[in-house]
Length: 220
Image 1 (cartoon, one colour):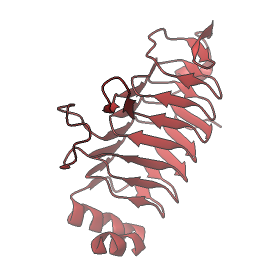
Image 2 (cartoon, helix red, strand yellow; image 1 turned 180 degrees about the vertical axis):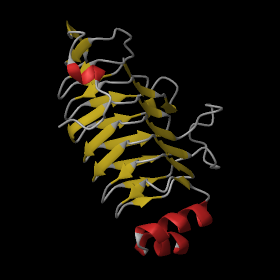
Image 3 (spheres, one colour; image 1 turned 90 degrees about the vertical axis):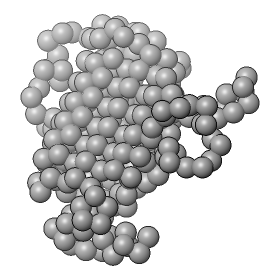
């Protein structure tokens, strides 16, 4: 904890070096972390990856940010690491607490990511708006124990504001999840708008929509 506190108050160039030396992280010289508490077990940040201010990323086995990906501010990314003596999730051999953000993908503000299991967000995808929840674990009332499952979001997807995605949910590439939706299963059909509680396919998206073919992640 003492080394983490020391690293936190250092200017970024020195903090980057300290985080690599003290914690074994891999942070590209062109990547940057703002005033955020980011201490997963393993951290990989590729060229141009950015984490803004007031984010928390803890209790994770691993966190990966692809090139030019970004996390804005006020997000909570946490989990339940696998290297614990707790009986929780003991039946899930091989479970990993991992957060993966693809290249040019973007997360805006004030979202919650429960990475008890893997959360993988594809390249060029946007987690938009505010206050969405991504929850990989819950109580299995039949078995009477905690259980978890992966959340997967494909590339070039768009996730609207204030949604909930549960463990086992999958949003296909080149698709949209509408605002305030609940996604509790995995879909495979691309070029589709999903929405509702629970979310279902609503209507196709034109395949010439420019969001899904851009080569720069930032949307002006």
